[in-house]
Image 1 (tube, rainbow, N blue to C red):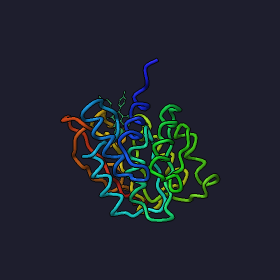
Image 2 (tube, protein in one colour):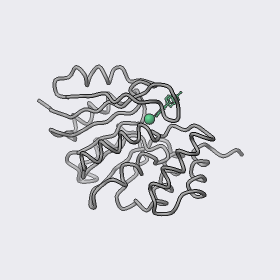
Image 3 (tube, rainbow, N blue to C red):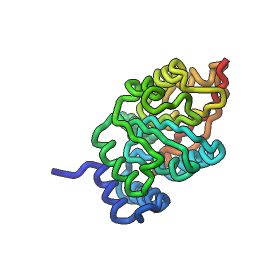
Length: 215
Ligand SMILES: O=c1[nH]cnc2c(O)c(F)c(-c3ccc(F)cc3)c(-c3ccc(F)cc3)c12
Ligand SMILES: [Mg+2]
């Protein structure tokens, strides 16, 4: 039967990227998605914004909601200091299987822990299972209807501290109006919008960054 899109992305990585070289994986995927087949990786334009937020923050404990094929996982993990840890949650088993192989290809397994689970099932288990009290950085890139409930769940589980930065993809396309309304109006967040474009496209999209105040 026909291969899946994630399988085709993995093949591109194994054919054109160099083992242990995260930048070559990023470039191989971006080239393929721009020239051959679109896929919902954050991409190079929004990815550069993600890079600058991570580099400025230098986080030790990172949570990514939505792994897909591991493109943004690799983008983030390649910038983390030694000893830092990235936990990434992926609900879709096919995506998780591909992402594990991409993460292994770049040799970032020691920094990255992929959990195949619905976000709401594992957010409450972060402390007892991973010994993580609070996260320094959270990247939301899973499903638009989960951004707000999962943010409230993270708050409720005490996983967000003063200064925790949350960065959300796709706040314009497909859009997360309830989430934007919440974080832009809530007194416990300062937020800013990075205007950009939908990956590998001319359509508008953007990232919303919020620093948690709590209050
Ligand atoms: O679901 C997502 N999660 C994370 N990132 C995503 C992302 O970066 C995207 F660009 C899209 C997207 C946007 C526009 C479009 F036309 C197709 C897909 C989606 C998405 C949106 C609606 C769906 F029905 C399926 C996928 C996602
Ligand atoms: Mg996205």
